[in-house]
Length: 550
Image 1 (cartoon, rainbow, N blue to C red):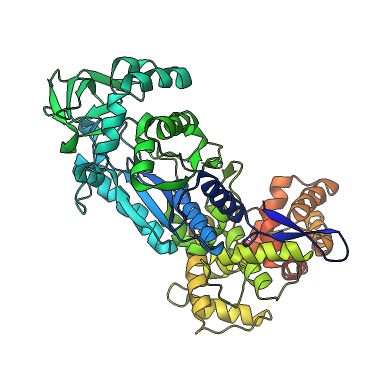
Image 2 (image 1 turned 30 degrees about the vertical axis):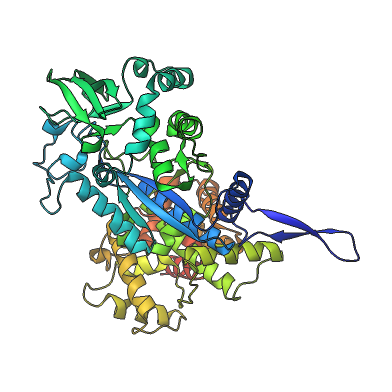
């Protein structure tokens, strides 16, 4: 999606479109943020954008997407002449609602349910606490991608007391807020209790407490530890009753009002949110505007990343693709490309998609440096702009470009300590001209080797004998080798394989098995249409014809 202004071409009267910024969806958002700020009459000396981070479980790429995209908006604001800062905010005062899956065997956090994650000992033994450990994993992902950010933690901010003036206002008007929460969400509990959770002095839990009253003159909150239901399971309260002070940092606001508080305290002008938070954001917008007197940030709503089974990535359920897993197979720029291509719509993603993004990154680089011509001119401008953002405004030429699947196919068969030498020799034997000393080749071979071995199997498959083929199968493979050379893309190649099997009376599963044996020396592997298209139809056709002529 692009944002365009219309200008008149002198003498013609015909409107001409001029791209705003670099012509990406990020430029459109940045433009709208700036225009809104102007209408509000607010100072544009520094426009802060925020990304919210959770610390309750192992971070996945959906968590990292918030920070990457927020940084994209920061860059787009700066492209349009507005200084910006990206605040990466981690909610490490959040209570642990469920023991997440995916933790090492022997680690049991059941006893810490409802405790703030910043108060739970680090079960891995390498950080100050559990929340700090999970936050470090997120920071590692951000650092490896190259994002610039100001890191803020809820626990530190509550301790520092920067929220206190805003909390006083919210708790003093809690009756009004409780009615609005019920109106927007149907939730009635904040008509009876304050939107604040003290940390129980007796049992150390946060969500089991119920704040009953607030005395503004002393900043005191009276509460009871009554218990709560988290993820469908009731946690019994310890029964403690007592008081705490807002200035102690021993408690946190409900999500229904906490976003608004940090927006006002940190002067946040933009923040995206996932659709599962729609009602919470609606309440917070109202609180920010009408209770705190701070115009809420400009928002965009995004869809979630899903796994290939159509389930959302979940820290608690263990269904996730972590940034660290992605970096085992691909560089950081490919992950940024995944986030920057678009923001609307859900996307199913897995490590099977990594070759596509690595190859598309190379293609964008070729477009940017003029090695590939794209028409019309406006489309080329948008693609070049996207590449600039993906490289964080530092576009570089990192040739040579070798299809990722071809590298994976060669590298997984290579001797363990001579993978680069082996791959370069095989590439040059088929017409490439690459050097073992190329840092790009060294990096790509290792990444592709990791992917190839983990998804297709290792070098022990090399040397397997060719499959025994019937005459009918030989004829079908020979015909397929001819037909794929005129195919227009991966989908057509995939269809041709099924069609050729049907025309020759061969079970598709058997036909695919024989093709995998010829091309990969094993009985299964990646989807063949994209694989053949990426490796090169001419090379694959030559290999198929050689196999059936033996």
